[in-house]
Length: 433
Image (cartoon, rainbow, N blue to C red):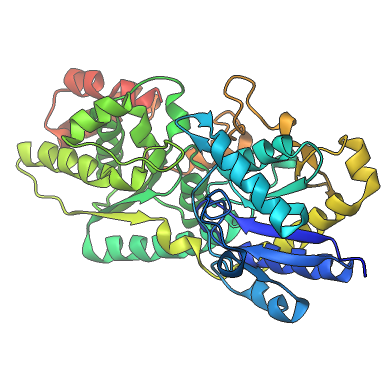
């Protein structure tokens, strides 16, 4: 009897709402097409290791096993950050181990679910298998930083934004009730989409994202100038409370990693991909300490509470948008892998699965790679876009016109304890970002 062809599923990188929706959709669609579906635990961790054991590190997925998992957060296959890259280079030993595992399992098709690093590992494997394995990658990240066409979000982003918006709204009410400030550091390694989306949706006092500084290296003091200026302007408008949302990626603008470590006085851990673990950088505390120092120098007491938001978003149950979206993406991954139309069009090469204008739109891996690094391109916030202009217009921040209006300048200078000239000199740069 001829054995069924097998399709494997694995999840890499950090969790995001909707992972189970993709797993369930892929498993159901593949089973209905006559494939046997094998779930691989912990991403590339075990299959890239010589200690890989199919009996412990895989599970058969039938329709009855996954029919309701799309409503759950987390990942029934778990996830891990292990990749096929080591020290910035392809790890040939790991690639060989994965190839051997695929052959042992008899897997002809592989669906990977993850962010840019998992996509890169998937493209490496797709190339190494030389047509023996066809790969489809479903992009996942609450950071929304993968270059999907039509400005489509990455799955998980909308759920994370919804939940984070509720949290920030609660903090805004607490700030108002207790007359204090909150500095909310929002997860987002490479881009400020989540911070800006949450700040805009909740109506936070202001949001600061790394993109607004361009390619410039900045100092902690520069960010504090923006914050202090906003706090003084808020006082001028009659309020001593507020919430500032700051993307964690702002910390990477403080120069090289070595310079950041010098500021902290300790080394910063890195993940398996070589990325700085931004959760280990106390950005909120750095900013709070400097702002408190400035107010204390004026003889003023101010209460600032820092709050990091990120981990509590990643395993939340997906909202309706992400449930529907992930089911479409999972179905699309199977459609791509089994369809001559798409495989011939892309010359039997693996692809990132996307939806564009309501249609399945597989993108060959080489089209999403950065030609300089070979890694997956990153989508950042376009600060020249209409969306950013709207977000910025509702923030309370010092603007150039505040320094140019004599009456406003006089009041702001008085609040700061500085002369008008000294105030203008100190905060001029803060109005230029």
